[in-house]
Amino acid sequence: MTEELTDHEQILLIRQDIKNLKDSQSDFHKEVRASFDDLKNNYSATLSNHENRIAGLEATRQDFRNKIDMTCQQIKDNRNYDILLTAIGILLVGILIWHIVGYHI
Image 1: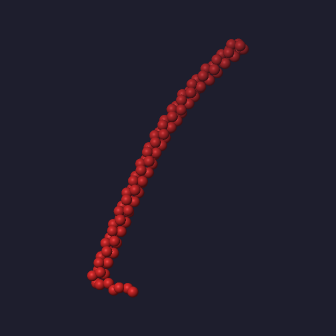
Image 2: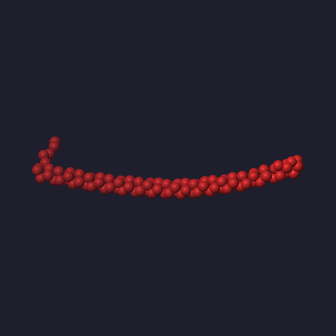
């Protein structure tokens, strides 16, 4: 059989329930704050990692671009050198043919 609680006992039970509710909400808020701090730190670390990778890629891109520019310059220099050698070769072949044939132009 159930006992009837007095008003004072009921008020004490309600007070205890409110205190427990307050404590559980406080614990919940602490957990939420800790979760947000973890999330913030995780995003911060991820963002920092991405920034470092992007900076590395930009440096690599610039280095690659410089190497391509140097290679293109070398090709241009070699092309001029090749044209010069070809012109000298054609001149020498012409002189050789003129010398062998004896045909005076």
